[in-house]
Length: 500
Image 1 (tube, helix red, strand yellow):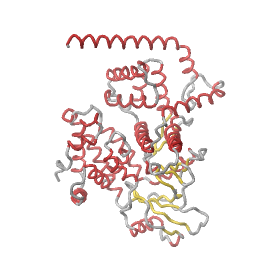
Image 2: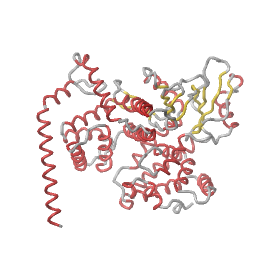
Image 3: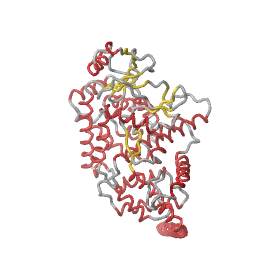
Image 4: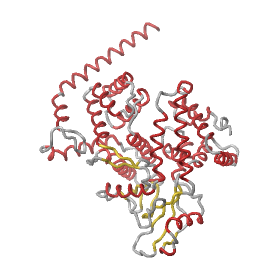
């Protein structure tokens, strides 16, 4: 089928952030490549759905319906749904993907459960229809275990019929879209990134959506990870789990973006709770591997009836290792110390493909250090912006889990914005928790190896000593660089005046 006329490039550009409107063409053509390589019956089904939409529907509505039709696009739509840079009408349609009414019939759901568990009545299991949610790959239905009257009401999460084949096909096509973009860089006017490699990293993560046995493992790890956090709820696993079915505690509440707040302080409290649990805790985890949720969209974050934050759907989980967290802290120290060469060296160690353009990276480092000298604070926002630019301008390839953590941060930031917690600042919270952890570490630092970074802050005693001893040189480097900035501005002004 010819999908060329399906999306109007000009209309699409209006839905994208102004600074990214020039990417409307590559977005349009990537979507055409994706749709044209789907199996014929899938293309026919999608086309019929689009034809049956009412006349005059907006492009946002068409894209929302399209995302609902394809598991991979459904997941990507959830990721983008809270991105405040997108047009509000598009975000409204993508928000609907976070939790949709079930399209799987009651009979099909029951037959899937019988196939996995055996006769439900023989196990004293009673379904409580209707299904309460449907995600990109699974459907959720409540149930009661009559053999355990004291056990709370539970839910079954079941893989949808035929979803494995559909998702595997679409993920393979996603890699082909990456290959297409790599081959058309100049024609499309897009940055020289290894798109196929990046898409394949995402590809490998999205495959875990089908592994409900892995989600069960992640739920167990999450319960342990947050065991000392009474305000965080992780659903408890129940009996009757299989590779295709999860039986777990039902959470009663509502999406945090749907919660009605009586006081503005409640918004701040909930935003801080989410930021502390999903971003700060993984960064400042003392363990070698720090668990984090890869998909914290609003449909997976519930404000419960008893005032807790429930974190749902652990199919996509990642782990930040010591190496990644140490590198992030060392980049910040090097930035505050005005040591561009040190920053470049740390980032090159992070580069997965070892193809980073060192010259472009040095220029990127210089730009972002200049932001600090002119009033910027080297917090999490600064670090994320810097790494984003390094990826685009210097072809830095970050580890898959660090890439997913960046995506989690973007998603959660959008959710917090929609809560309306304007007084909340994630940078400030992270700095506060970093300093608190630093102070709590002091008693054991006296007995630690000077070079050891086995602390939540990932700072060794040698790191601290080096910063303290070199403080006068840091001040000197700062003012020297600031003077160069002034000379550069003066030279640029003279050149501009000469040509005018």
